[in-house]
Length: 615
Image (cartoon, rainbow, N blue to C red):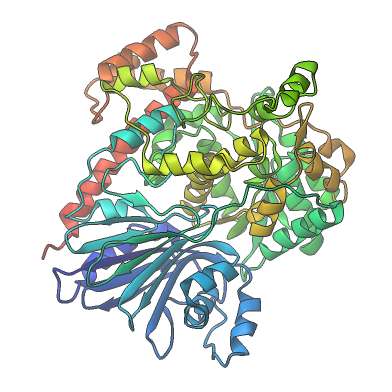
């Protein structure tokens, strides 16, 4: 696990090392074990390393073809040992046991498209081909690892961290109004946009090719989940794929553990992992409020599988102190309330392990969220009549926009924080038109076989990569902890999303096939538990926040955020508090946005004053 950065700047004969060091060391927590650079003329590349595989020799960059191919990576390639054997049979000679060296040699043997087709992993890859003077970037299929970029006037830069790009003297850090509108609707910014107008995000399953002599990125989609079919899958095949997915994610030369909530998904991961790594460390977080604490179930699972369990209690009184700390770890704003206890859990887990597995992705893949119910087939006379008339029970015709639908929900059914009218009032402007990314998203969703598959695929393309995986990555990496998601093995994803509908959700029973095969590893009472979700006592925490800051008026006094009417936000929050905090998700997202911006501006100012060298 690492953080990677790079720069093409044709205004320099040779890029000063101080610039790449600044960009690289912004990400110290992502890689505290060391660093590496490559600088040649107007090209500079760098990394920070968290040593997980081949601790002694796996230092980047790693090269091939007599040093003509330069490879950097953030992440892990889980099938690198198999690919290494394949390359050795083609007479490639390896100097390390690092998965990144497989990328260098694999690029020579198979080309960028062939390489990406073969690898299974979570990654952001940067490969410089000195022969063709082209830089190649790629992000993993489902967006587990971040990769940002910006360009203009003979310059191109990329990074695992948005702050490293924002600090460059030629980057304009104007707030993107489309990104802001989507944040206020979703509490995250989806797709290829970010909250900053000049900085873009490489999409999951996307690669870029950047010619050094004309550094304008050419974008290619090398992978998109196939959702235009369904097939029957036996329990044996599903169980075998689950086992392979978990076992492949256990590979490491450092201690590995599992986040265990007590729900079905993390329990499956922990149970399989414990079979292959007896007494594996598991970690859970509890809450003082019995209405919000389900850690007892995690302890029951731990006893059943024989793990070495570590249980921690979240101090509800620490919310006001912890929120600014969490905001400071973020390079992009994510208004997800679960970040706070996750930050705490990652901090505790790091005392015991360097790698941790979790159950991210299972709900989207196998149909686990209750809001999918509106899209699942309902066997009633009305729906039978619709089918006879040639119409699906729910064709999703009302959900042809991301955040501007008749009901305030996304195409997945995920409830929005605010409707279009509220956002227009707070931003003082009309809402932007649909952009190319959103149009492509909706076109892809329309290829789904049924409304349920369409809904869960919408989450696979937005909620999962742009909220859940960002939260997981940032909170873990804040403590130099590597997070892995076994459910995101490509073969397993395609099996789950293309299961027949009755094997995913029926009569409000979720993850039917997954629950059935879970009986191979888990006791019956765990499999039959309904999904509770990560519910937090946010009402009390928000009251505590404003009390700590001297009330709503005092907190918002003097605050400025480009594109937002702070006075209207202040009035809205006061009314909401008087009514008993109705819109707690929206209020938390606003606070997080403001706190993120404060920290981001401060860090940006310090970086630009201390480090940037201008040509």
